[in-house]
Amino acid sequence: MKNYVFAAVAAAGLMIATPAIAGDVASGEKVFRKCKACHYVDQEKNKTGPHL
Image 1: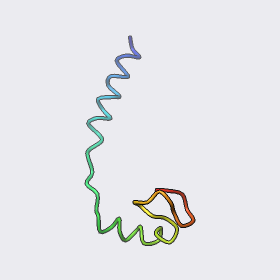
Image 2: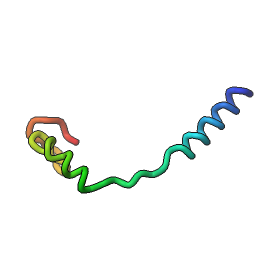
Image 3: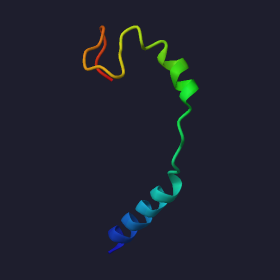
Image 4: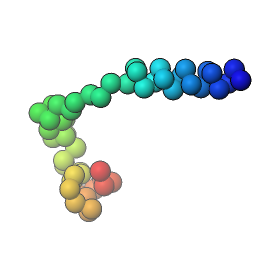
């Protein structure tokens, strides 16, 4: 019984503690500049790195 109570409390805590975070598009584009030498985002085939 204690395991069920703990699991329920832990699940509720995770739902409360995990807010939806909006992405920052401009920041993401800036970070991806380093990655685009090897990767594409919208194509199945990449330059040298794996498909993202």
